[in-house]
Length: 182
Image (cartoon, rainbow, N blue to C red; front, side):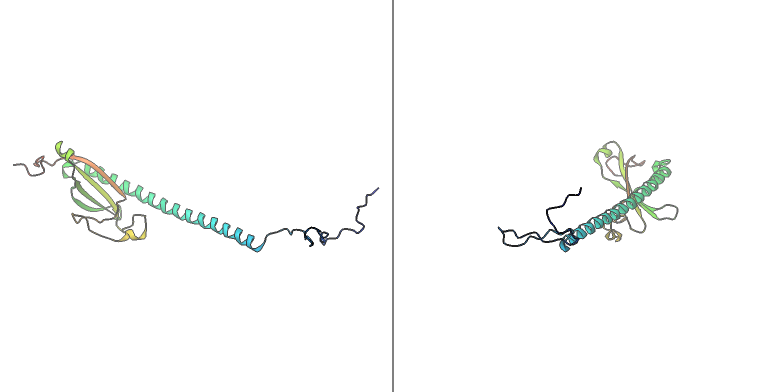
C-alpha cells in the first residue's frame, strides 16, 4: 500500500516558496544552486593566474636550459684550448685573445691575475675566459652590448660563459719580483 504524504497536492518541478516565517514576516525562497557572476569571474581569474604562472615558469625553464647548454659548450671550448696549449706551457698565451670553435663562434681571453702567493712560489695565475662572438651569454638582451672597459682593453665587460684559472711557472728569464732577470 502506498503512503500518501501529508500534502494533498502532488509535487511539481517548480519549487514552491516556503510558508511565511512568522518571526521574519516574509517568505523564504529556496537557495538556488550554481554560481553567481562574481564567483564565476573569481574562478576564471584564479585559473588565468595559474595558467600565466605556468607559462612564465616554462619560459624561465627554457632560458635556463639554453644558458646551461651554452655554458657546457663554452666549457668544452675552454677544455679544447687548454689541451692544445698544455703541451707547451712556456708558449701558453698570457694577456692575449683569439677565436675558437669550428665556425669561430667563440672568443677567448687570457690574462695574468695578480697573486702574491703564486709569485712567492715562482709562478703566476692565468685566467682563461670564454665568450660567445655574438655577445649573448644567455641572461638577457642588455648583455648584448659590446664594451671594452677593462683596464687592459682586451675583451669585453660581460660575464664569461666559462672561466678557468690555472697556475703556471714564470716564463724563463722572469724575476720572481715580476721584472726581467738581470
